[in-house]
Length: 302
View 1: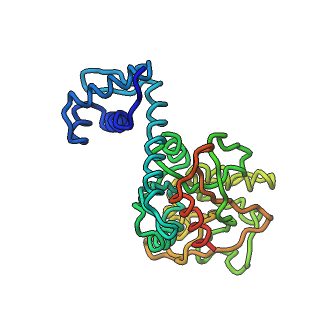
View 2: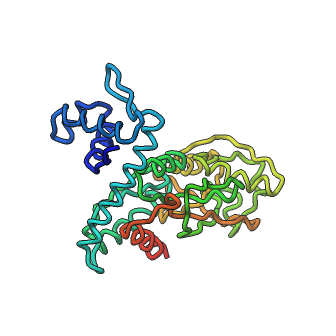
View 3: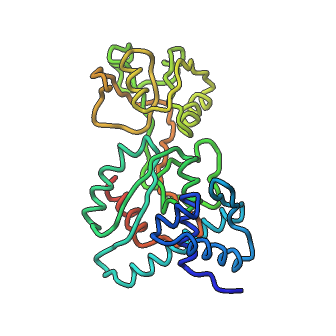
């Protein structure tokens, strides 16, 4: 069996991302024959078919999908090795891709990114926003180094054993009310006081399950009027007087995009806050860049 080379793995990734030998060759500034030969040699070395060739290009086999994940990890490790060799204890360099749950991103990421890039200007930092499912899949595929996600513990649903989470902050829930709501004079409100009123449910997974678990814990049935996966849509509907809602992330501006205000009050009942953590693949050694980013998250969110 011939050896697998890093160059072959690079060609594999390019072909998988572009969907054809022609596009991969263009991306790599190589001839089609060079890429095609390298991929054929790689399949022979591994003793398995990685791609299915068809008229419109090529697609990964099930084996190929796993090989792609491993190839990305291996090349990331090589890049980290190169960076470690030239880094001093004071500087970091290289590429770092971070995912963030979409509603957390505009609230938490700006300050973290600003602080991190100031402390480590040599790191090529980029980020991707999305849902839990999307970001977990990108972690497993190797497209992300780490992700900032909510903890699943409130539903009893266990996070996959292939993922490891480190808590960086806990966010307590609160109630959001229209400006002229009858309960705005109170410093805090209970679900029992609100349960008959229309609820605007923030329903981007796992948010909906989290907020509904409060009602289940108190044996109450909420009157759900609208469901939305948009954080700002929740605030806009409440500001319009369409109902109340429960959220966990707070901003410094209590106003909708329309310029209409709303009121925030604490939620009674002792409902636990929702942990936010950095998540990465279990068993994979974090790069120095990723470790530094996690440390920066803790410092920036104090």
